[in-house]
Length: 352
Ligand code: MRU
Image (tube, rainbow, N blue to C red; front, side, top):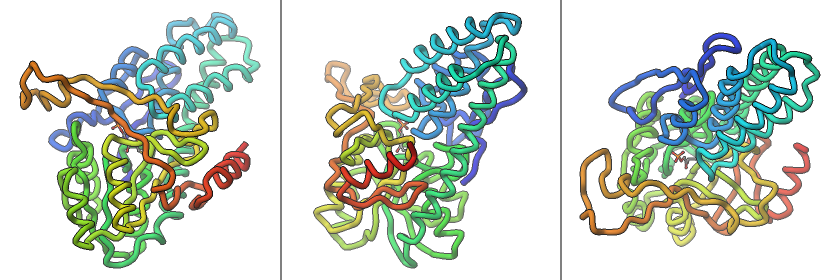
C-alpha cells in the first residue's frame, strides 16, 4: 500500500523523512535524515531498504551531501562534491543495482547542468531527486497493472521478503501486483515467507497485506515446499535486487530455493521489478556482488542469542536465481518472457 516510505521536507537544505523499517510492525516511527552520513547509516542498517527505493534514498543522500558546499561557491566545486557524495553512498550496500542507477542519474544531471553557482545547481539536483521519486511511483503502478491479470480468483500465492509500498515511492513491485488484483475485485490468499534472518516477510509484508485487507498467512521459509507438494500454491511472485542480461536474478536469500521448489512443482515463478533493476553491464548472475552481513543477524536475532558464540556464521543477504526457473519478469513495460537474452536486450534497447 502507499505508505510514507520516503519524503523530502523543505528546500535544498531540507531533510529526507523515512519510516524506520527496523521498528515495524511494532512501532510506526518517522525519522528525519538531515545529513549524508545519517542517510548512509539508514541504508546500511535497513531503516530504509528494498531495491527501487534505494535509488531515491541514494539521490536524496547526494542532495544531503551538497550542504557541505556554500550556495555562493562555483558550480565546479559542487560537481566535485556530487562525485564525492556518490562514491560515499555507493559504499553503503553493494547488491541492489537501483542504488547505483540513482547515483548515475544524479551524476549525469550534475554534468548536464549549466548553472553558474552551487546554489542554482543544488536546486537542479533536488528537482532530479524528486523526479526519480515521482517516476518510481508511476512505475510501481504500471507494474501492478501489468502483473494483476496473472492473479485469478481463488489463487494461493507465495512471496518472499518484502516488495511492497515500503520499497518504492508508492505501490511496490511484487505486492503492487497483488494490491492491483485485489482492487480489481479478485479474492486470493498470500503466504508470506517469514524471510530469515531479518524477517522482512513476517514483519513488513504481512503488515502491508493486513492493512490492504488481503488474506495473509506467515510461514517459515522451510514450509513452502510442503505447501507446493500438497498442490496448495498457484503462483510465486517476488521482487529483485539486480537482474543480469540473461535473466539471472539476485533477490533476498532464500529466493533461489523457492524458485527451484516452484520449478519442481510446476508452479509459475515471476519476478516483479522496474527496468532500473536490470543491469546492462552483467551478462549473467555470476558477476552480481552479494552483500555479506553481520554474524549477529543470524546468531543473535534481535538481540536474542540462539547459536553458540564458537559457531561460525554464514550470512549472505542475497542469492541468485537462475533464469531458467523464472516464468517472466513483470515490468512497467509489460511482462518479459524467455528467451531472455533476446527479450531483455530488446527491453533495454527500447528504453535507451
Ligand atoms: O535486504 P533488503 O531488505 O533490502 O532486501 C530486499 C529484497 O531482497 C527485496 O525482495 C528486493 O529488494 C525486491 S524489492 C522490490
